[in-house]
Structure formats: structure tokens, C-alpha cells
Length: 74
Image (cartoon, rainbow, N blue to C red; front, top):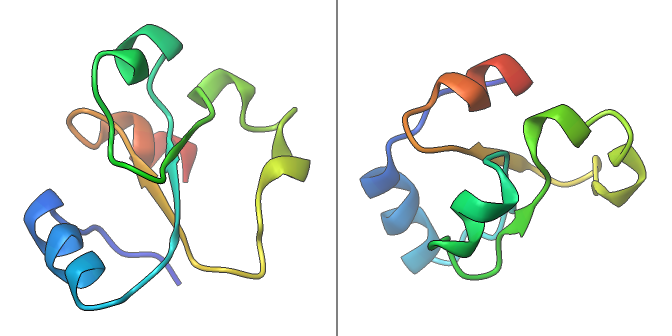
């Protein structure tokens, strides 16, 4: 199952103890400019090759600037 979640809703869920795996699909330079603590950077074009780095048994939240890359990566 997949769903879209706003940054504000995710922030609230994290405050309430939810602990999904946070994958930031932006470029390394965008990630270096600021990111959610505990997120890991796997640029969208590297997702397939870095699949072993994902904990697929856990919930995964894909993050990008506006949502379009996360939607494509999904």
C-alpha cells in the first residue's frame, strides 16, 4: 500500500513515535543542503542499484523537495 503524506503530517507522526525508514531521493548536493534527521540519501537514479540498502520489511517513506521524484521512485 502506498500513500502521499505531507511534511507536516510526517513531522507529527515522527513526534508521536512512528519510525519508518526515511529515504531522501534528492541529489547528494540537495541532501547536503538540508535533510530530515535520520533520513538516508539514495538519489532516485541509484535506487535500483542500492536496493540492498533498503529494509523492505519496514515501512519506507520516500522524500524529495516537491513530491514528484518520490512519486516516480515509488
